[in-house]
Length: 336
Image 1 (cartoon, rainbow, N blue to C red):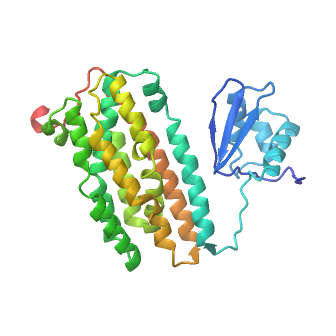
Image 2 (tube, one colour):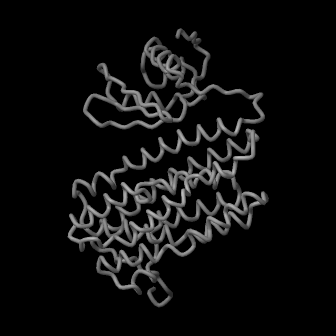
Image 3 (cartoon, rainbow, N blue to C red):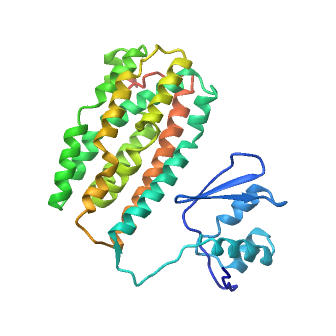
């Protein structure tokens, strides 16, 4: 499909993620679509540097001037993206978005972001035994804090929800989730910690950031919070496949066989409860969503995705340091 471009156009890519599985190939993921980009001479970093200016704020001529790439080459790249329908198309007159279209797009985007979370170096490092065994322990420890925060962010969502149907759904969700942290706690006890050590542990800052971000979303944006359940209920440690991977890695890192059985049972319960379907239930009687609400929900969902990145970064940073206390201690006045 031919697409006409002009020098004044300010192209913006649709939200995407890049992954480099093999030398010389770049995987570009946009929703549920995967594109393999071939490199022809240019370095990957040069391409990614150019890509960051496809933000809707720079014209083709400006991008060429900033990056030092020939105008004709910039035009060719933008043309290629346009032909693949990868450029953002805005309809400023659209005041309502069909609920079914919104759900489909959220499904595609959460699939993309879940995949990207799975590409984090925490997972490849654990698989390749690139980290010391305390990093694996730290993953389970922070998973405990993450699960233990459920009553906090769900109750915040309930308190600030104005829709009776949504409030009922969230109340049922709280009833199913409020007391699941013991499963991760008992797994940690099986791994060698005491119950007291686990319950008195202090989350690392990346985990606190994730929890606080989700609570803030729950406070200001019920639709966004419901959308976020599709992301945090479907992450690696919250799927049966992910739980089985953790069980295998635990043994490979020298922890007792079946030590994670309690945590795996939590995952099985969540899968059975279909908590990733809350958004569909919430919108089943609605035909449209105000566009402003949809935009806010998507932005909050995207922010939570980046909170996951910091969560994973925090686990590596803290538990890789041989000088840090494990589990993490609170610092009181008498510690100063």
